[in-house]
Amino acid sequence: MPRKVRTRTSLRVATFHERSYGFRPGRSAHDAQKILFINLRSCCNGINKRVIELDIEKCFDRISHTTIMENLIAPKGIKSGIFRCLKSGTNPEFPEQGTPQGGVVSPLLANIALNGIESIHRYHKNGFKISENTPEKNIVEPSIRYADDMVILLRPEDDATEILDKIDKFLANKGMKLSEKKTRVTAATDGFDFLGWHFKVQSNGRFRSTPSVENFKKFRQKVKAIVNNSNYGSNVKAEKLAPIIRGWRNYHRFCKMDGSRLSLWHTNKRTWKVFNKEKRNDKESTTKLIKRAFPEVPYSENKHVNVEGKKSPFDGDMPYWSERNSKLYNGETSKALKRQNHTCGHCGLKFISEERVNLHHIDGNHDNWKSKNLTAIHESCHDYIHMSKRVIP
Image (cartoon, rainbow, N blue to C red):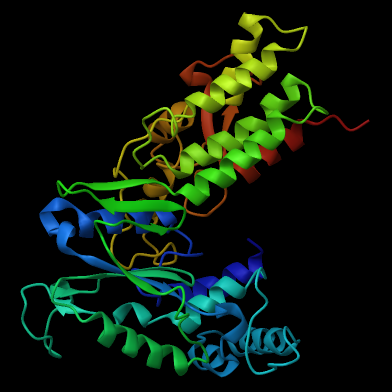
């Protein structure tokens, strides 16, 4: 992320609602997935709950510039820069509204405009009426938002029409409105799609999360386009497939991923047949290529550990964020991070930024995987080490 945009984000992100997960440092779609599990599992009576699937009509095109500027917390220089960015013209027909969809700063501006929508539906966890003196820990706000995508969980006694009317008024003040066609109320037992996953409470009360049909379809199309491309050899195909399959499996690693379809058994078999048709490949070499093309990623259903409350990477809690970011890695990198107490082996600083962690071979021999020869360091530190070793002719 560019330094200027990161500065803008840090100035505002600490005031966002704790159930807002989209485009925020330290938070991810997996946090939203886990919140749904916590609220819809059997012990929370998920089988009797309903879900409002919210869809904001042309969200990025209709955000009011006035709303953004009134809610933006930033120094005068940055505010004037964002104001000029908004007024540069994204839609000639509506000069007072809209942000460039796909722009670097647009998700942040959408978060600013929509912040607070998560608190519209709230109730006391013990059934009492909420007052000014009610402790925050006793107030439940069962809403999950990821940028402009949002779901609200309803108890049997909640009035969906009343909640939608309140949301309509909230959005109208910001120049937006709900899409009547796409916004719907669904029973948790019927299932619903959110963030590329399909969530459903089964008849026995058990909560299930799997890749959505649409998500799996798009993934298969990408894989088929590579496998069936006659311009690539099997080696090139394996190299191109590996990051796509690893990324897809990583994203869904907290879902139920067994069965021939989601374990990619059929896709694997079909790819093996295509690779084996090449004259230079035999069964052994084809099997090795398949292992390269389909890297294994272990899954653990609903085991993601959520961010604590309103915590932010900008709150100064270095030990917490360093340890949490370290858990994003596995294998030898994870072991090295634990040995080093989540500090960089070169500069000694904690791993708290979004900068990647690299595994460095101390003696320069990449075949030496002994633990004493491996150290986890910042990507920039890794670049500096190797840059200093270059011989300038």
